[in-house]
Image (cartoon, rainbow, N blue to C red):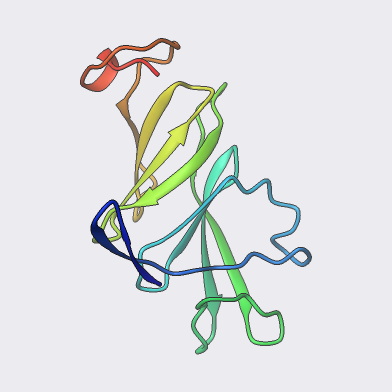
Length: 136
């Protein structure tokens, strides 16, 4: 899709997760794509990379007749945390994940799964700041 949001042009993709099949049992809280065919799911306890196996791309709709899925874990949420939302950097190399229980924004390197805290101290609050000085 292409639409203006707050006056800025935004281009995106729509992806539908099935009610049955291998993805049905996942506790999905966020879906993001890099626009080049890589899809990432925030499932509460982990970030998963989802891709099609074979020659047919995983585009707008997962269809069991057309796609075999490959699912691999990219990162695991720190103990006590819960991933709720996810975004992908424009170049697809970095994932940004909202850890709602951990009161933090986590940065995940897509290629390695290296997880770091971008913002938030782990305790709730309301304070503007950089890195751990930010409270959500």
